[in-house]
Length: 142
Image 1 (tube, rainbow, N blue to C red):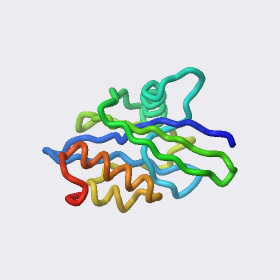
Image 2 (tube, rainbow, N blue to C red; image 1 turned 45 degrees about the vertical axis):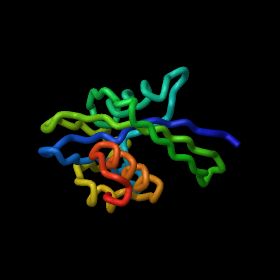
Image 3 (cartoon, rainbow, N blue to C red; image 1 turned 180 degrees about the horizontal axis):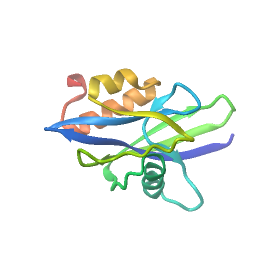
């Protein structure tokens, strides 16, 4: 089985002390998720996350390596996908320039709205983990 490795981040900004999460919609489907993409060559997961976020949104970020979560799943083409996600904070008011060939829409969402907008349950679980990490909430408080 072929394993495809990808990396990205739960990108957020603070509205006061409340995180708002950046979600991207694929240009080729109704999929909403986090900025991420395939690891290229000898890139590390962190290097991939920074590059993919820059390519998809024009944001230059520093990822927080203290938070690291993984998602694994099997794809329709028979490949296995291994995704590593970090968190990355950006200042309020940054300008996003979406990569039009890959991203049709983007938006900033509070936790509840982001969780509702995300397409897949494994990404919702990942948002739960990131939100708990960022807010200090315990899992039952999310």
